[in-house]
Amino acid sequence: MAEAEKADRIAKRRKMGDRKAAEKWPLIKPKKNLQITRLKDTDLFTVQDFFSSAESKAFVKAAESIGFAHQGSLGPTHGEAYRDNDRLSVNDPVLANAVWESGLSKLFSDIKIRGKVAVGLNPNIRFYRYKAGQRFGRHIDESVNLGDGKRTHYTLLIYLSGATKAKTKTDPNSQKDSSSEPLVGGETVFYGPRNSVVADVAPVEGMALLHIHGDKCMLHEARNVTKGVKYIFRSDVCFA
Image 1 (cartoon, helix red, strand yellow):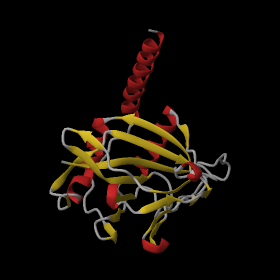
Image 2: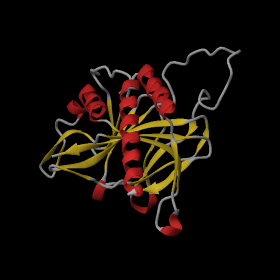
Image 3: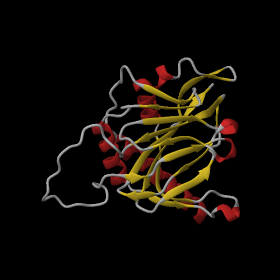
Image 4: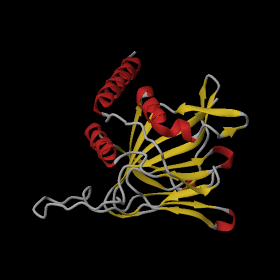
């Protein structure tokens, strides 16, 4: 009985956290004329300026206000990729739909997987934070069955920090911390046969990175952050 009550309390707190999160998310504006850079046909591509700088910073602020939890792994000796980062997960179908309809739906209009078409994003939204010294070793992303005929086939990563097109002046008297430092490191690297590098993607604020996952997923890693903080918005593209 005590265990059931404890589980119920945890579930209620989680739902309350999701409701609070929904109140914090920025409004996502529709994006027109999105620029795609294909790194490996339709299996791997980037989209510049998918989030504006203001949207990216607002997501970081909202995620930090909710709070991250550390995520590690047992490591390669136990059959798991090395993992050291911080994570926040929320179930938010409204946010997932807003991001999907802001421009992703058009980008996937001509992409089919085994006769299935893209129908939206996984409502399980994850935010990742990598501080200096943190990384995620080589791994693949699994395809997930979401039920009702829906299955994920693409990973969506949107960098919420990283290089920016326009440098802004900072107040020399302002207090410096790791989150305001320029991000150095944290590249997402994809590997092909014989350990060849298919793509080496440096984080750019607001840029989306999409790659096929499941049985066609390329081995990839998030390299060590050497300075600053890398923030990522993560979801998956669902097909049905």
